[in-house]
Amino acid sequence: MGSEMCIRDRTDLQITVGEVEYFKGICAQAGLNEEVELKLRDFISAKNYFGAQELLEEQKVRKDYAQVLLGLADLVKGTQDLESAKMQVDNERSLQAIERLEALYEVLKKYGTEKYVSFDLGLLNQYNYYTGVIFKGYTYGVGDAIVTGGRYDKLLSYFGKNAPAIGFVVVVDDVLEALSRQNKKPHTGLDGCLLFYTPDSYDAALKKANQLRLSGVSAELIPVACDQDCRRADLRGRLRREAMLIHADGSCEQLKS
Image 1 (cartoon, rainbow, N blue to C red):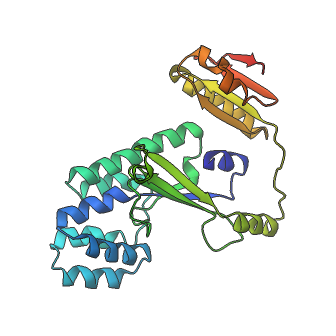
Image 2 (cartoon, one colour):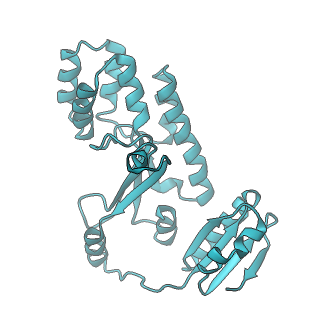
Protein backbone atom coordinates (compact mmCIF):
# COMPACT_ATOMS: atom_id res chain seq x y z
CA MET A 1 0.00 0.00 0.00
CA GLY A 2 2.77 2.43 0.93
CA SER A 3 4.64 1.69 -2.29
CA GLU A 4 1.55 2.38 -4.38
CA MET A 5 0.93 5.67 -2.58
CA CYS A 6 4.53 6.72 -3.19
CA ILE A 7 4.30 5.88 -6.88
CA ARG A 8 1.04 7.80 -7.32
CA ASP A 9 2.22 10.86 -5.40
CA ARG A 10 5.93 11.18 -5.71
CA THR A 11 6.60 13.76 -2.98
CA ASP A 12 3.89 13.65 -0.33
CA LEU A 13 4.57 10.45 1.59
CA GLN A 14 7.64 9.41 3.54
CA ILE A 15 8.01 6.06 5.30
CA THR A 16 10.34 5.47 8.26
CA VAL A 17 11.23 1.84 8.96
CA GLY A 18 12.77 0.32 12.07
CA GLU A 19 13.61 -3.17 13.31
CA VAL A 20 12.96 -3.83 17.01
CA GLU A 21 15.10 -6.99 17.04
CA TYR A 22 18.23 -4.86 16.58
CA PHE A 23 17.45 -3.07 19.85
CA LYS A 24 16.33 -6.25 21.64
CA GLY A 25 19.47 -8.09 20.62
CA ILE A 26 21.70 -5.43 22.18
CA CYS A 27 19.57 -5.31 25.34
CA ALA A 28 19.80 -9.08 25.74
CA GLN A 29 23.55 -9.02 25.22
CA ALA A 30 23.88 -6.22 27.79
CA GLY A 31 21.90 -8.26 30.32
CA LEU A 32 19.00 -5.82 30.71
CA ASN A 33 15.81 -7.21 32.19
CA GLU A 34 12.39 -6.60 30.65
CA GLU A 35 11.49 -3.72 32.98
CA VAL A 36 14.68 -1.81 32.19
CA GLU A 37 14.33 -2.59 28.49
CA LEU A 38 10.84 -1.07 28.43
CA LYS A 39 12.05 2.09 30.20
CA LEU A 40 14.96 2.40 27.79
CA ARG A 41 12.59 1.85 24.88
CA ASP A 42 10.48 4.82 26.04
CA PHE A 43 13.53 7.09 26.28
CA ILE A 44 14.87 6.10 22.85
CA SER A 45 11.44 6.40 21.22
CA ALA A 46 11.19 9.94 22.59
CA LYS A 47 14.77 10.67 21.41
CA ASN A 48 15.58 11.44 25.06
CA TYR A 49 19.35 10.97 25.00
CA PHE A 50 19.94 12.17 28.56
CA GLY A 51 17.22 9.97 30.05
CA ALA A 52 18.62 6.93 28.24
CA GLN A 53 22.16 7.77 29.33
CA GLU A 54 21.17 8.12 32.97
CA LEU A 55 19.30 4.81 32.93
CA LEU A 56 22.23 2.95 31.36
CA GLU A 57 24.64 4.45 33.89
CA GLU A 58 22.37 3.35 36.74
CA GLN A 59 22.37 -0.19 35.35
CA LYS A 60 26.17 -0.11 34.94
CA VAL A 61 25.86 -1.25 31.33
CA ARG A 62 29.17 -1.95 29.63
CA LYS A 63 30.46 1.13 27.83
CA ASP A 64 30.47 -0.32 24.29
CA TYR A 65 26.91 -1.61 24.62
CA ALA A 66 25.76 1.71 26.09
CA GLN A 67 27.37 3.62 23.25
CA VAL A 68 25.46 1.66 20.61
CA LEU A 69 22.16 2.00 22.49
CA LEU A 70 22.63 5.73 22.98
CA GLY A 71 23.35 6.09 19.28
CA LEU A 72 19.81 4.88 18.58
CA ALA A 73 18.33 7.81 20.47
CA ASP A 74 19.55 10.58 18.20
CA LEU A 75 20.28 9.15 14.76
CA VAL A 76 18.15 8.30 11.77
CA LYS A 77 20.12 6.02 9.50
CA GLY A 78 19.88 5.95 5.74
CA THR A 79 20.58 2.81 3.78
CA GLN A 80 24.24 3.74 3.53
CA ASP A 81 24.49 3.44 7.31
CA LEU A 82 23.04 -0.06 7.65
CA GLU A 83 26.46 -1.59 7.09
CA SER A 84 27.87 0.67 9.81
CA ALA A 85 25.10 -0.41 12.17
CA LYS A 86 25.95 -4.03 11.43
CA MET A 87 29.61 -3.43 12.30
CA GLN A 88 28.66 -2.09 15.74
CA VAL A 89 27.14 -5.36 16.96
CA ASP A 90 28.24 -8.97 17.17
CA ASN A 91 25.10 -10.73 18.39
CA GLU A 92 23.16 -12.84 15.90
CA ARG A 93 19.77 -11.32 16.77
CA SER A 94 20.82 -7.78 15.86
CA LEU A 95 22.79 -8.89 12.81
CA GLN A 96 19.79 -10.74 11.40
CA ALA A 97 17.67 -7.62 11.95
CA ILE A 98 20.01 -5.59 9.73
CA GLU A 99 20.02 -8.33 7.10
CA ARG A 100 16.22 -8.20 6.98
CA LEU A 101 16.33 -4.43 6.45
CA GLU A 102 18.87 -4.87 3.66
CA ALA A 103 16.61 -7.46 2.01
CA LEU A 104 13.65 -5.10 2.39
CA TYR A 105 15.63 -2.33 0.71
CA GLU A 106 16.25 -4.59 -2.30
CA VAL A 107 12.49 -5.15 -2.63
CA LEU A 108 11.84 -1.40 -2.36
CA LYS A 109 14.27 -0.82 -5.23
CA LYS A 110 12.19 -3.16 -7.39
CA TYR A 111 9.16 -1.00 -6.63
CA GLY A 112 11.18 2.14 -7.39
CA THR A 113 10.23 3.67 -4.02
CA GLU A 114 13.47 3.38 -2.05
CA LYS A 115 13.98 7.17 -2.11
CA TYR A 116 10.83 7.64 -0.03
CA VAL A 117 11.98 5.31 2.74
CA SER A 118 14.46 5.95 5.55
CA PHE A 119 15.66 3.59 8.26
CA ASP A 120 15.55 4.56 11.93
CA LEU A 121 16.91 1.91 14.29
CA GLY A 122 15.63 4.03 17.17
CA LEU A 123 12.05 3.68 15.93
CA LEU A 124 10.56 1.61 18.73
CA ASN A 125 6.91 1.14 19.57
CA GLN A 126 5.40 1.23 23.07
CA TYR A 127 3.78 -2.16 22.40
CA ASN A 128 6.13 -5.00 23.26
CA TYR A 129 4.49 -7.55 20.95
CA TYR A 130 6.25 -6.29 17.82
CA THR A 131 8.93 -8.76 16.78
CA GLY A 132 10.59 -7.31 13.69
CA VAL A 133 10.03 -4.56 11.17
CA ILE A 134 7.97 -1.57 12.32
CA PHE A 135 7.10 1.51 10.29
CA LYS A 136 5.46 4.92 10.28
CA GLY A 137 4.25 7.02 7.37
CA TYR A 138 4.21 10.82 7.27
CA THR A 139 2.85 13.45 4.92
CA TYR A 140 2.44 17.22 4.76
CA GLY A 141 -0.35 18.94 6.64
CA VAL A 142 -0.39 16.93 9.88
CA GLY A 143 2.16 16.71 12.65
CA ASP A 144 2.06 12.99 13.35
CA ALA A 145 2.21 9.70 11.49
CA ILE A 146 -0.83 8.90 9.34
CA VAL A 147 -0.02 5.19 9.21
CA THR A 148 1.76 2.96 11.73
CA GLY A 149 2.32 -0.76 11.89
CA GLY A 150 4.73 -3.63 12.15
CA ARG A 151 5.39 -7.33 12.38
CA TYR A 152 4.17 -9.50 15.26
CA ASP A 153 5.01 -13.18 14.91
CA LYS A 154 3.59 -14.33 18.26
CA LEU A 155 0.59 -12.09 18.94
CA LEU A 156 -2.00 -14.19 17.11
CA SER A 157 -1.07 -17.27 19.14
CA TYR A 158 -2.77 -15.63 22.13
CA PHE A 159 -6.01 -15.74 20.13
CA GLY A 160 -5.76 -19.38 19.10
CA LYS A 161 -3.80 -19.19 15.85
CA ASN A 162 -0.04 -19.55 15.70
CA ALA A 163 0.74 -17.44 12.63
CA PRO A 164 3.17 -14.59 11.91
CA ALA A 165 1.57 -11.41 10.60
CA ILE A 166 2.08 -7.76 9.74
CA GLY A 167 -0.59 -5.25 10.62
CA PHE A 168 -1.07 -1.53 10.32
CA VAL A 169 -3.51 1.23 11.13
CA VAL A 170 -4.37 4.24 9.00
CA VAL A 171 -5.45 7.34 10.92
CA VAL A 172 -8.30 8.29 8.61
CA ASP A 173 -9.06 11.66 10.24
CA ASP A 174 -5.45 12.76 9.79
CA VAL A 175 -5.37 11.49 6.18
CA LEU A 176 -8.49 13.53 5.35
CA GLU A 177 -7.06 16.59 7.10
CA ALA A 178 -3.80 16.25 5.16
CA LEU A 179 -5.66 15.89 1.85
CA SER A 180 -7.71 18.98 2.66
CA ARG A 181 -4.63 21.05 3.50
CA GLN A 182 -2.91 19.82 0.33
CA ASN A 183 -6.01 20.69 -1.72
CA LYS A 184 -6.41 17.13 -2.92
CA LYS A 185 -9.52 15.03 -3.30
CA PRO A 186 -9.40 11.33 -2.41
CA HIS A 187 -10.01 8.83 -5.18
CA THR A 188 -13.19 6.94 -4.33
CA GLY A 189 -13.62 4.75 -7.39
CA LEU A 190 -13.52 0.98 -7.06
CA ASP A 191 -12.11 0.34 -10.51
CA GLY A 192 -8.68 -1.14 -10.73
CA CYS A 193 -6.76 -4.14 -11.90
CA LEU A 194 -5.86 -7.42 -10.23
CA LEU A 195 -2.51 -8.88 -11.27
CA PHE A 196 -2.06 -12.57 -10.52
CA TYR A 197 1.51 -13.84 -10.52
CA THR A 198 3.43 -17.03 -9.77
CA PRO A 199 6.80 -17.10 -7.94
CA ASP A 200 8.74 -16.96 -11.21
CA SER A 201 6.73 -14.02 -12.61
CA TYR A 202 6.95 -11.67 -9.62
CA ASP A 203 9.39 -9.23 -11.23
CA ALA A 204 7.29 -9.02 -14.41
CA ALA A 205 4.10 -8.50 -12.38
CA LEU A 206 5.71 -5.77 -10.29
CA LYS A 207 6.86 -3.98 -13.44
CA LYS A 208 3.33 -4.12 -14.84
CA ALA A 209 1.85 -2.88 -11.54
CA ASN A 210 4.20 0.10 -11.50
CA GLN A 211 3.24 1.00 -15.06
CA LEU A 212 -0.46 0.93 -14.19
CA ARG A 213 0.01 2.94 -11.00
CA LEU A 214 2.00 5.60 -12.81
CA SER A 215 -0.91 5.95 -15.23
CA GLY A 216 -3.34 6.41 -12.32
CA VAL A 217 -4.78 2.88 -12.26
CA SER A 218 -4.88 1.03 -8.93
CA ALA A 219 -3.13 -2.34 -9.20
CA GLU A 220 -3.32 -5.17 -6.67
CA LEU A 221 -0.76 -7.98 -6.78
CA ILE A 222 -2.15 -11.45 -5.96
CA PRO A 223 0.34 -14.33 -5.52
CA VAL A 224 -0.72 -17.80 -6.70
CA ALA A 225 1.18 -21.08 -6.60
CA CYS A 226 0.53 -21.87 -10.27
CA ASP A 227 -1.30 -20.48 -13.31
CA GLN A 228 -4.41 -22.55 -12.66
CA ASP A 229 -4.91 -21.16 -9.13
CA CYS A 230 -6.07 -17.78 -10.44
CA ARG A 231 -9.06 -19.53 -12.01
CA ARG A 232 -10.30 -20.94 -8.69
CA ALA A 233 -13.87 -20.04 -7.79
CA ASP A 234 -12.90 -18.21 -4.58
CA LEU A 235 -10.44 -16.01 -6.45
CA ARG A 236 -12.69 -15.40 -9.44
CA GLY A 237 -15.15 -13.73 -7.08
CA ARG A 238 -12.55 -11.04 -6.44
CA LEU A 239 -12.29 -10.03 -10.07
CA ARG A 240 -13.30 -6.45 -10.69
CA ARG A 241 -13.40 -4.63 -13.99
CA GLU A 242 -10.09 -6.05 -15.15
CA ALA A 243 -7.78 -8.88 -14.09
CA MET A 244 -4.66 -10.34 -15.61
CA LEU A 245 -2.37 -13.32 -15.18
CA ILE A 246 1.24 -12.21 -15.58
CA HIS A 247 3.65 -14.74 -17.07
CA ALA A 248 7.38 -14.86 -16.41
CA ASP A 249 8.18 -13.54 -19.89
CA GLY A 250 6.14 -10.39 -19.15
CA SER A 251 3.15 -11.35 -21.27
CA CYS A 252 -0.32 -10.69 -19.83
CA GLU A 253 -3.34 -13.00 -20.06
CA GLN A 254 -6.73 -11.33 -19.59
CA LEU A 255 -9.02 -13.10 -17.12
CA LYS A 256 -12.79 -13.05 -17.03
CA SER A 257 -15.01 -13.33 -13.98
